[in-house]
Amino acid sequence: MSNSSFLNEFLLLTFADTRELQLLHFSLFLGIYLAALLANGLIITAVACDHRLHTPMYFLLHLALLDLASISTTVPKSMANSLRGTRAISYSGCAAQVFCFVFLLSAEYSLLTVMAYDRFVAICRPLHYGTLMDTRACVKMAAAAWASGFVSALLHTANTFSIPLCQDNVLDQFFCEIPQILKLSCSHSYLREVGLIVVSLLLFFGCFVFIVLSYVQIFRAVLRMPSEQGRHKAFSMCLPHLAVVSLFISTAVFAYLKPPSISSPALDLVVAILYWVVLPAVNPLLYSMRNKELKEALRKL
Image 1 (cartoon, rainbow, N blue to C red):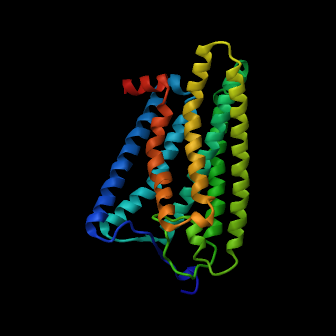
Image 2 (cartoon, helix red, strand yellow; image 1 turned 120 degrees about the vertical axis):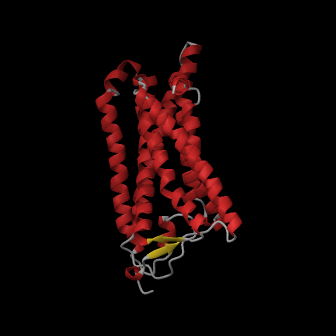
Image 3 (cartoon, helix red, strand yellow; image 1 turned 90 degrees about the vertical axis):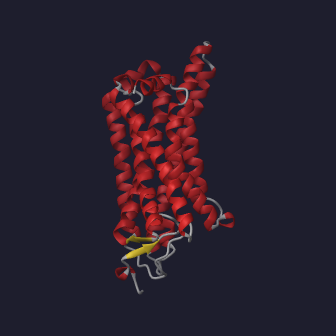
């Protein structure tokens, strides 16, 4: 093929060649997918129905929605391909996956950054919490996180799929991923997308620095608390968010910033499964960790 104008489908990575192993892959992914649907669905319902959880649990509802959407972006297509014994995905379907991939990744990271600010205000500026984190402020922050994800996804998708592709149509991943698509380029047009990725990485590290500085201030404030009960309550508030942030950032960094010397298709596949399949199912357990109000609301459901 001479360029991407003749490309109407991509071929994704398959997990197995035999029918039995394909059905096994379908069954495993189906079990994880249903678990993620149930866990995130329960959190969404609990937060939506219990008005006591709207603040600061307001952002938790958005995180559960993002986890539900992220696993729905990649897993159903992979399961369908295994069930039908195929590996094809249409050009438009691939573009949709890339858009959703970047959109959900950017929006979730923005929300985790906002939640770090929420914890900082709650512990370090408790007298100003009602003013700084009222309902209107929460709505604006959540809207800004979703909007930033949408703009980032629009730019990356437009840039990626405007690049001429002539190397092949085979992707070494079970879903459409920007680095895998860039490998198919046969021109220097991909440098535009690389430049956009560099800008996104700078924003990523900017948010990371903000989260780290927020938690430095939080831990300093907690250690100065005279009451052991107050310290316990503060740690209970921060620990679930810190666990989710740590898993999110460490997995993302290992997936996309690891040295080429340790990179391999098998390792990339394992990390992708962990990031896009396992984490959305595990995150609800981290959200509810040491959260008595949420556990009580889930028990009522």
